[in-house]
Structure formats: structure tokens, C-alpha cells
Length: 76
Image (cartoon, rainbow, N blue to C red; front, side, top):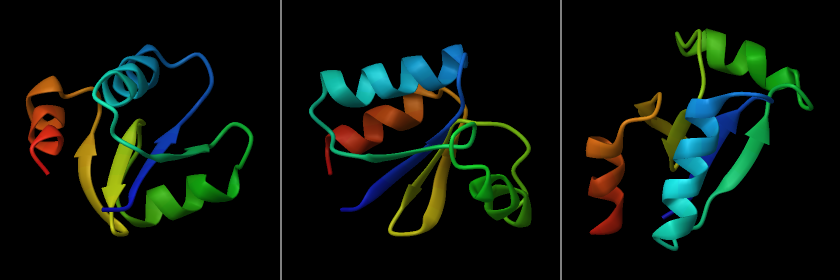
């Protein structure tokens, strides 16, 4: 499973999502749109206007801090 998370600086939802993933030993690759602005266009093309966005195998699966949906990643 290849998880990517798109975040930005000073985003509490991003921090909470990353904290959840780390606490449950779920590996992920982070792309910070503040430091890597090329991902802003990438996310907008997919219809997203806010972060965090989590993709699994290049397909978006979670937008925002959603503990209910994050829990489904634990079982995988």
C-alpha cells in the first residue's frame, strides 16, 4: 500500500492526520504544498480545494481530518 498525504504549513487538520498515521505505524509520503507548490495544481485538477488529502496508489481516498475513515487504514 502506497499512501501519500498532501499537507500545508500551519494546518491543524494536517497535523492531526499525520499524528494519527504515525501513532498507528501507517507509512506515508508527505507532499507539503507550501514547499512544493506544483502539487496545488495537481490537487485542484482532482477537484480538491483544501488539505489534507490522502491518496492510496494515486487515487484519492480521504479529504480532511476524518478519524472514521482513517481507522479503515489500520486494518489494511
